[in-house]
Length: 126
Image 1: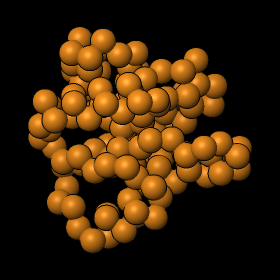
Image 2 (image 1 turned 60 degrees about the vertical axis):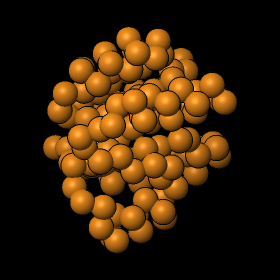
Image 3 (image 1 turned 135 degrees about the vertical axis):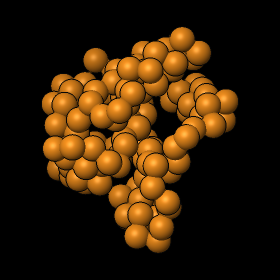
Image 4 (image 1 turned 180 degrees about the vertical axis):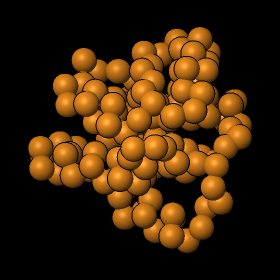
């Protein structure tokens, strides 16, 4: 199954998913852990995956690396990945994002209208 957006966040994922579904009328799935995200991506694809950095069990960087490794070994084209964080965007985080092909870094709290416009344009061009 191909979905529009996969949101991986251990906090308030339901509210964010509901907002995306209602405001953009997209097919959105939310999961609360990196482990659940990897399980979902075994048999599904997402046009956009939004990953929170701070999660239990598996942090966002570990999940990002696992997704990119699967894409590389499966000879798949890299997917669009956005990182969600409440942390300051320091040079270490920016370097990791660059190394692993992160398309966007979003800081909490979100500017919802701006995110809505960017997601809409991304999904419409795919």
